[in-house]
Image 1 (tube, rainbow, N blue to C red):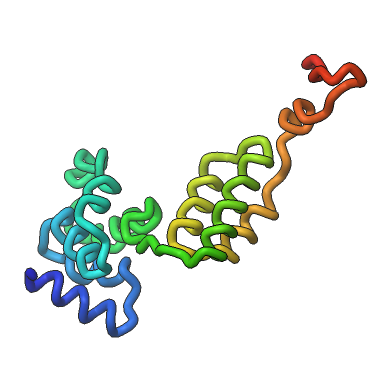
Image 2 (spheres, rainbow, N blue to C red; image 1 turned 90 degrees about the vertical axis):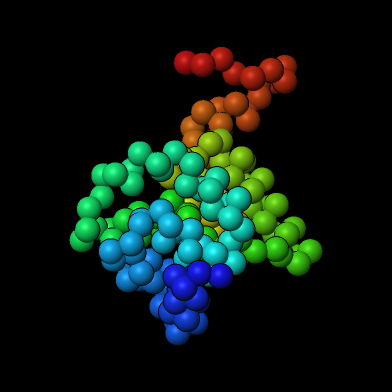
Length: 157
């Protein structure tokens, strides 16, 4: 275990959020190596972290000393520091139902879908539900769901 991982574990154990831990540890250090260390301290498997960071390689060069906090917030926003959980059977049933509910809405904006997906992955089911019930139902889905007397779908107007 590296010294950076150990320092990250200690900071996380003290109650600091991953973004703040990342910002503090990356000062004068490699941005990507520090992200890997914070994720290891969180218990996120390295393969998952590498998958989450895929495509970010070109971003690392765009940041300079002093950008540590901003970069930490960006990494958090895209879910790099998310700790995925395994739910018990009732929780898993709720997660599946919420996922099906997303489809029943007729499509959701990508940002909302990403946000709900993160909440489902991290076990924050009440938060996912709250976002889901606030979303509008898309007109196109409603139109497709309605059938005329013959049972066929109505034609687009």
